Picture 1 (spheres, rainbow, N blue to C red):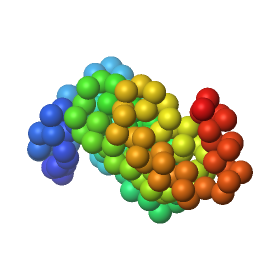
Picture 2 (cartoon, rainbow, N blue to C red):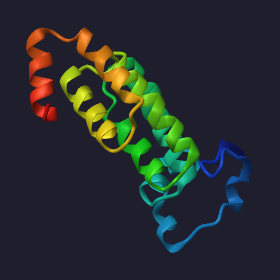
Picture 3 (cartoon, rainbow, N blue to C red):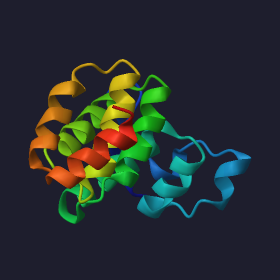
Length: 147
């Protein structure tokens, strides 16, 4: 019996769960089990699995330059009030503002949406990202963001 150690999204508590003793609901029956189980459980709303999948997407994005999937999971967790989701979201925003996303215009739009939603700290990162853009990209980004 393999023990799986993971950091649960609920309050950052460290949880040790035996794979065979994880609670399963009718919806979980179709999940394959083991580490391959995380994406399935994440899609079903398991916040711990959502964090694991989101964090993995974040790490992959740092290599690929595509933060869309990491942002999707971080937003989903954050809207549920999950602290790890909020941290993952901030980490993703910082990567976007640092020019980590391959599409600067899209990154600017995502940062602008979040800033319009009250994340004022992102203004600094939007400005930093604008400095990395070509003049044409900056004009396009501002136009699409509405300002």
